[in-house]
Image 1: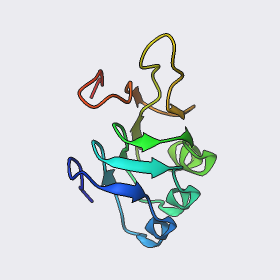
Image 2 (image 1 turned 45 degrees about the vertical axis):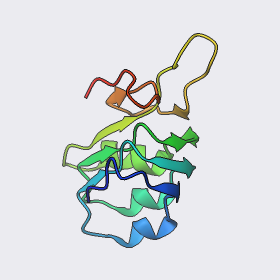
Image 3 (image 1 turned 135 degrees about the vertical axis):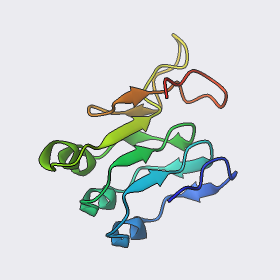
Image 4 (image 1 turned 180 degrees about the horizontal axis):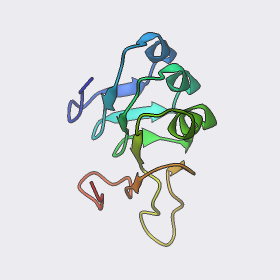
Length: 111
């Protein structure tokens, strides 16, 4: 599923957990807010999750990190987990991300 650079806003629905065949979730560079739904952890076929350059807060749920470590397929995760500057904390805490961006549209992101 690719919906990057679409100026979407609002939250990511918990119904995303019903997309059982979803392998790639590219929703970077939008204006999505709220927390990342734990229901993403139900998607055992996920291979690539790119949720950076949004306005999510909180942390990448443990259920998603567990997928990364429990499945045989490689799972790649990129989120806004770098500090944008010394005075601001990262937008998201991510213990299992492969790449961290600074959360600024047009800012640093190693992907």
